[in-house]
Amino acid sequence: MKQIKVLGPGCPKCIELMKQTEQAAQELKLECNIEKVSDIVEITNYGVMMTPALIVDGEIKMSGKVPTLDDIKTMLS
Image (cartoon, rainbow, N blue to C red):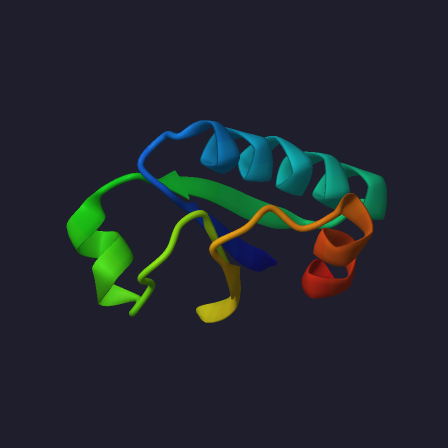
């Protein structure tokens, strides 16, 4: 089961990334656990300087923007 984290304090871009990530996982029929992380200390522990960020199985896949749905699907695959 994939462990997916969306990092961000709750800004509109963070909310959009969470929504798009959930949609991508659903369309891919992934068995996964998606978690929203808004604690700034935990975010910086990942080394992320710009939010939103997408973490898949402990690896930073992107930060600082909201990718397209297709790009998210690629990152989750």
